[in-house]
Image 1: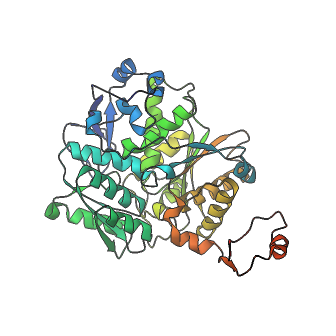
Image 2 (image 1 turned 180 degrees about the horizontal axis):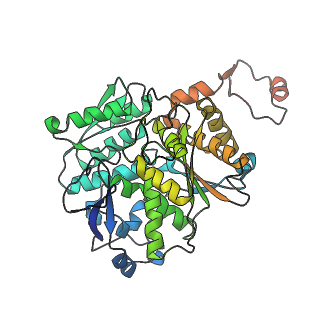
Image 3 (image 1 turned 45 degrees about the vertical axis):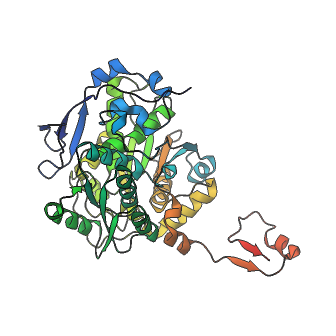
Length: 429
């Protein structure tokens, strides 16, 4: 029988400025320091003396099983919708098509709000509630807004969500369904962020924007903790990750450093972290290619992969530091290829790849052809959201449905006698 995660002690020692290392108090609500994000730091020696991987393996399979490495004070503090461990799926057919036999997909679409945003917002709302926040606001490219609305509702908070006017309809609906105040903005996520910032004093809301509080990173880092445990406390050679604000990549890299210091990993090998962006919005790729630590914001950013349509990331230097320290790279894929890679991936494995993950599939193909991904490399792609949340994108890539007035089986056999997959669905009367 699996144990319920429990803790009697929080192992957070302090918060720390990511830009210059300034030590900050962890016992009060914090946002940015000098305009830049903040790390949460732990007493890892104390954690090592308290818990080990065998203890964790006996706990319930949720993100909260890593409680000692998270900032919540007790289990009574947490705001949860039952965030289970997302599956790590072998993908042999897609791997063969990409010439990467050791291909795996970690499918975050199965989390409570249909994307990896469940992790970060569960933790951010948990800590906001702990510090007495009753009203939150954030800008969103889509999935974060739905997750924030859901967890705010769970916590009994009021939520204000600002999103670009072309945000997928499902994301708009889920915000309103959960009781949030949803607003469409004539602009991109940076314009939405300005509105949230401008309204902070007047509206007395707490800003849950990406990396503008320290705890979304801690929720997102559970992707890395889970991955290590699912791989028997080892890590893959390469992690391919669609990157907008970059909290997930930053969080995973932080998790790997903490695991190595704890001595829980069976190897000192660290994965090479790959940032994937679209040619329509690739500020991190441009900074990586030019050797810069900070990225210039993109103007007129456009991509169907809304989750990576972030013209300027407040944690740009944290993303680039992680990529370079890991020996990784940053790559953009042609915007016009994303839908085709979504379709190829889904048809090969049955996994509903979202547009952001479609970009990753294309990136793996390119890196494999270039020899950057080597023979025998174990590669993990993160599927960050459920494709069902992108009906507009699916509608534009799928052919029209066929309608059949009669059950003409001879015609049916003739049409589908080959080896090719059907391009449509027939409705039979």
